[in-house]
Length: 132
Image 1: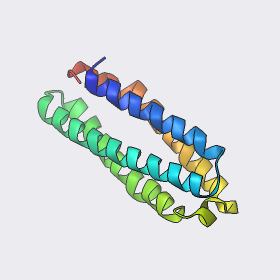
Image 2: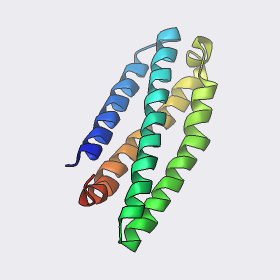
Image 3: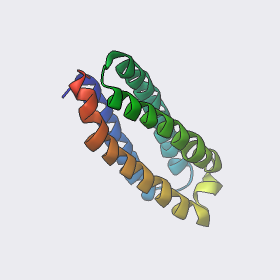
Image 4: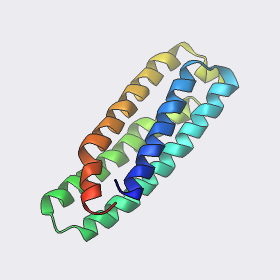
């Protein structure tokens, strides 16, 4: 496994750990953990974008290039339409203790778990082939 892919997987594990903590927290503690998760995810997305853009330039495999571009587009849409609005909505202690939070959080949590599984099973092996 490449150093980059190992780093990405470590970030995934840290995000999964934070997701688990959020369920058992409330108030400002939950807001603080959400902010930590937001920072970690946005940094991760930025790093993935950088590495995948480099991999697209490096690869001669047109099917990989198409898949990678689609991956980047999808990643951007997830961040813009789901993650950022969620983190914006739940940025106060009152908001994270509201009735809406549990349902919205479950949706985000399930989407993140699914995305992590997809990346690790389908996309990261392709990055590893390119030395990442």
